Amino acid sequence: MRSKNLHDKMFIMLEKFLKPFHRAYINLYEKMTLEEFEMVNITKESNVLHIGCGPIPNTLIILAKNIPANYVGIDKSKEAVEMAREMVRKYGVNIKIEHGDALTYPLKDFDIIIVSFGVEPSNEIFERIRQDMRDNAFILYRKQWDFMDKIYARNIPQGFKIVAEHKRRDFIKSYLLQKV
Image 1: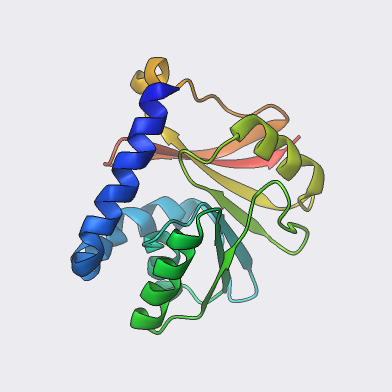
Image 2 (image 1 turned 90 degrees about the horizontal axis):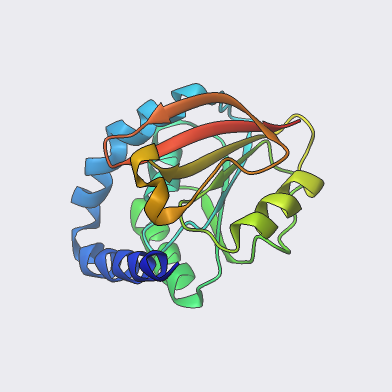
């Protein structure tokens, strides 16, 4: 858990450092993100929620630039939300960014829920998602590659089945999940 907290703090510092270079940062992830989301059928009618969008909501920006849909990003950090709103304005994309907590944010309207790597408390969040999400909704859950399980101890949350999976080049493995 200690290494996880350190990882989170380092990632936030990295994103703050990369803020002036946001275009290069987003371009670096664009192909990888679009490949990852090939396993999800996003349409212009889709409502997509990203839990833990962070200060540079690169996933949402990339998706909004390439796939028309209704996008919402939430983060528990007010500082991250302000930075994310600024990024969204710079890109001129239609993404709603809100200060919100996955344990209380309304989920019923979403077809696709993206759960970022490192969102905590994960067990409680996934139980809440399972209870409140639409029956036909999908979750795109990001975790580390399997060889890092000993460090981060992330498993597939209970009550969900794997529909598809994708290994990204940045040591993140994405699972497309549905509740059972």
